[in-house]
Length: 221
Image (cartoon, rainbow, N blue to C red; front, side, top):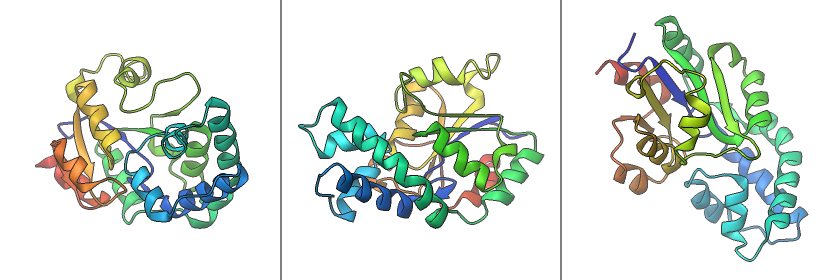
């Protein structure tokens, strides 16, 4: 058992390299709603924030309304499954590392801003479902990272007897690290993912890993 018995793991950019599938689906969704898609570099920059589809669309199309954003999200979610299946891969060492952590008695849970059915389907496709004690992801009318209500309303009910000192948030973007700070739990920055180096480092994470397979060693140090 490590000093953090419960690991909250982000998915995109932490366990899986999803960026090619995301970029493809974003461009298809922009085309579907009649908006010129930003460049790949501009979309990648927006992805460093680790937000939701709604926040991404509204940042890029600031004069849009809720209906515009909802239409964009519907198109994206229609396009994404095919892109995910064709382009998403797990980062090196993910399966072996999850297995080792599970063998040590660590409790693993997914905490993602990705649409819940989408992340569950991707996890299942890679055979990862049995590793996790819970999957908390984006759903209508629920808060998302970095809102600390995610901890109070969605994580604590899953682990009601565990002190916050037992939790470590492992993720690659400012949404993950700021969530950990807001929620009063420790953080581990997956620096190989999609986040901004400058912004993530500025949040002073407790741990930093250069690959997911580095996590067990980082937990022991």
